[in-house]
Amino acid sequence: MELKVAIVGCGKIADGHVEEIQKIGTARLVAVCDRELLMAEQLAVRYHIRSHYDDFEQMLDVERPDVVHITTPPESHLALAMTALNAGCHIFVEKPLATNHEDAQKLVGAVEASDKKLTIGYTYRFDPPALAVREMIRKGFLGDIVHVESYYGYDLAGAYGKSLLGSPTHWVHCLPGKLFQNNIDHMLEKIVEYLPDDFPTVRALGYRREHASYGDIRDDLLDELRVMILGKATSAYATFCSHARPVGQFARIYGSKNTAHIDYVSRTVTFDSSPKFPSALGRVFPPFAQSWQLFREGSRNVLRFAKSEFHFFSGLNRLIVLFYESIIRDVQPPVPYRDILRVSRMTDEIIGQVFEPGSVQRK
Image (cartoon, rainbow, N blue to C red; front, side, top):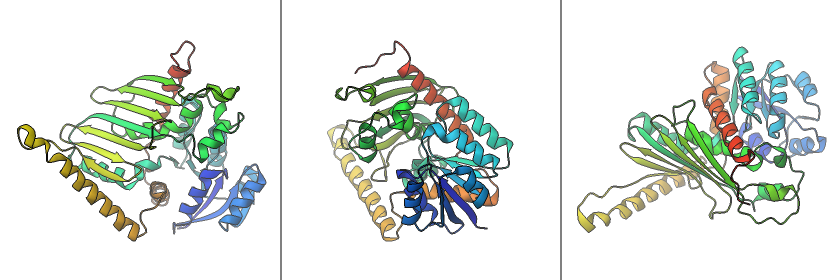
């Protein structure tokens, strides 16, 4: 079975979707759409895509795709997803699913009432190190999960950051949670997988470290966020940071048997080493054990690179493959709807606390 796929939204992230879709033998990308026709045309030309549109409903009517990838700004996600769902399409929605939890619930409810499937762009969950740790947890290597730390670094000097700070009319400034809302799905989705609670206690503090210098809405952009999450048996700490260098993305999973460190940038998994000998001698060997782990992980990455398996969008590719397989085989999609809604609910709580009148914000 070959799935016909279309994309709506031809901005930067759409290129990554196109590249990974075109690697998959069970799918054929038939069309792209953007309300700016030139954007759609340029994407179609770059990747030799047959058709391009500036009218979403016309594309659905003419092309009749099986799957639609929605890679537009978040405020348009709900309307586009419902339109695609009503046209009989399965839907892949970039994060965040919607601009608030109520809309996320509405969309997930509509999907569950249909015979269609939904997934979201939680790509880090499907990177090789995350897959490896998931298997270790399944085998009991970490024991019970006690605490999780999730760190998401953001580069305001990078391509996305420059675009955001370059214009006071950028769509991120219009989101209820602004910069945080567009990014913290990646921070939170690394936590909910290991936190079983539906309604944990959430405490959030956001502030601005960058000096005000624009004289407009950009000076109100908060760029640092700290979140504490407490469940019945597991706690978590989440950090969104725009100023620490180098820009990192990692998670630490503290288990009752072992503690794992997942580095999503270098794509490595290492474990903390405990002293095996008394006194000062026991402190000599752990650094060598850590060095050996990093050497082993680096060697594995070299082998992946040699086999063309080590590429930037590895997690996105795996997620798309699993999503398409869930459609073809009619099984559960790769990201549980419960996890999507828990991230959405936490995001609403965080934004409510950080941006509520009288909240503590340092600018």
